[in-house]
Amino acid sequence: MLSYQHIYHAGNLADVHKHSVLAWMLDYLTRKDKPVSYIETHGGRALYDLSADEALKTGEAAQGIARVKDWFPSNHVYMRCLQQTHELHGENAYPGSPMIAVQTLRDNDVLTVAELHPAEHNALELALPTAKVHRADGFAMAHSILPPTPRRGLMLIDPSFEVKEDYATIPGHIKKYARAWNVGIIVLWYPILTSGAHSNMLKALEKDHPTALRHEVRFPPARPGHGMVGSGLFVINPPFGLAEQAANLKTRFDQLK
Image 1: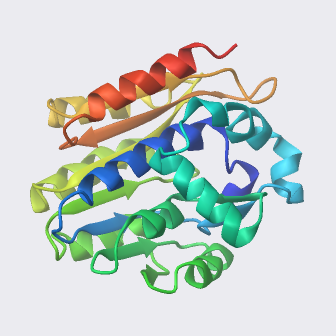
Image 2 (image 1 turned 180 degrees about the vertical axis):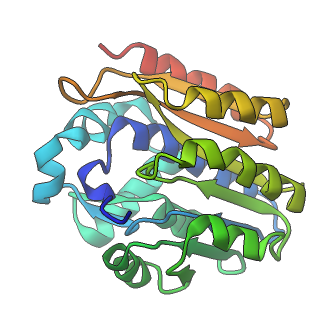
């Protein structure tokens, strides 16, 4: 299925959660001179216009980044990415995770991103001219390149969960990824749903990876009847200090009404 386009949800509270934590982790990795690999399995288009009709239709950005910018100091790496995006593309532009990676990493780091949707893939190629961009199934792409060179690095798995079987198959993929790349930081983003569709997946992941960091935040639904009421990150080999950063962010989310 190829109907999902993130422009309807770009800049929402789940993005604030995911992207602020991702930016912090990438900044952490670049504190050492050694090069890193960044891999993303479901890249989207990397750059979003929050004034587009699709974004305005859902209003999720208005309930998201537009509402909570003051959570982060101006020197936070996430804020620096937002500012750089605004300077280059206008005040209504928002960086997806591949763009945050480009803005945070260095010339000697290696970025590899997959996106299967044809229109999203074309936009991704235009947005990331220095990255290795694949029009491919992201899960299969990751299997084909792990372990990467350089070995130090991070992989973000950020599917739309449009394919409901993903909840059942993701633990198996991640178990193989972690075996192939035992030093890599492997990050799964998942929605917290009123249906509980994510619950069995999390049980399987925690059984396979008992030392991983599971970090979840809750927030009001973006609109009446919307089934997503939170955002989760499951992080294998979490970098030092991430648990504290995540706890501080959760405090902010807990204050939302």
